Amino acid sequence: MPQIQPADPAQRRRVAIILAIAAIVLIAAYFAFDHWLQHAALRMNTTDLVRSVGRLISICVIAMTVCLLLLGRHLLLRGRRIVRDRRYPANDARVLRDTPVREGEQAVRIGNASRIAGLITCLLGVAVAVAGWFWAGQFG
Image 1 (cartoon, rainbow, N blue to C red):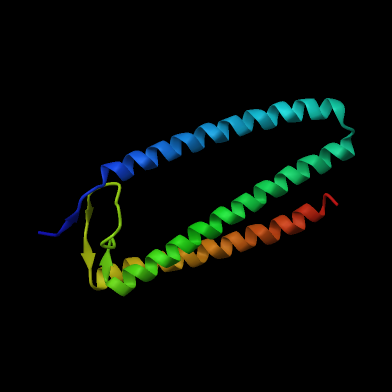
Image 2: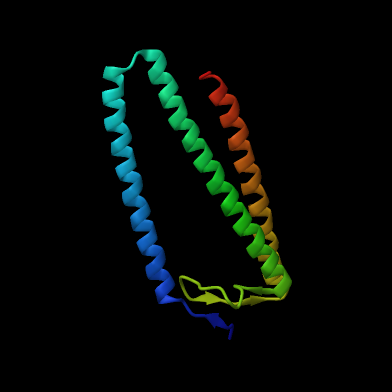
């Protein structure tokens, strides 16, 4: 019978609260941007409006880049830890649901997959930054 790492109810609640707060903040930001854009379109000439929107989009590109790089780093570090310990999930991991423990080669495969996903995510973050840099140059 495989060993099961039990879910952490406190961690599950924490994740649910953080996701709910993030959703509320993003919805509020959407409506704030929509409100700003309506008023800015009436007050600004086209050139200034394009520059302002370009700056806001640049901020969004920076935020996407940071998120992708942080996620990639997390995947790389977790993958390295899994490969080193030859156990998935790690002993100190707080899982959101009951998770069967994998040890040995199975865990190493999962760890290597996590490391590859982390590398791809970091490369995607760099690609978003580079594309954003060139795209932002169009706004002068």
